[in-house]
Figure (cartoon, rainbow, N blue to C red):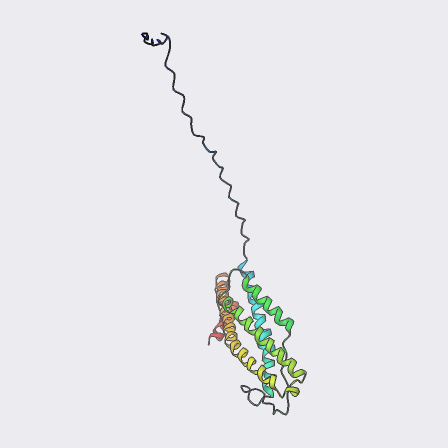
Length: 227
């Protein structure tokens, strides 16, 4: 049996080719809105003169209280009954005066005052650079002095033949050797600051008033300090 060939279907006359499907556009990620930067708060206006007066007043007061009054009196009291200050007590002393103590509350107040003053801005050089070292050395020395004061006040030296007194003396000398150079630097820094302020004040007086009696009074004072 002979197979008939398959007939091809003809396309209708009005038939159009199928249009290509539109390409899918990639989905665009939403644009993130830029976050608003927080506004920097306005910095308070610093009254440099007020800061200087507060710093200088506090630091000078500490110098007066710590170094020139209580510490000097304590050292003089202790040295008064020792035959050899560097050697310290031997146990053969006929008279024992002990040593004057330093107020613990005064020490704590001075330490807090100095560190608070140094933290203020603007910086006050060269005093800020040595003030903390000064008060740390002063507190260490003061604590040793107070331990010595308690020891001698309670007359414990009679019980241990000055054994602890000799040990405390070595600690005292070590503290004193650390304190003295820092105290000198501290005092010199205060003097340097005051000298600069006086020269600036002299210039201001001349600009405001001219070379008046006020001007020459301060000029003579400055000159006397320099000579």
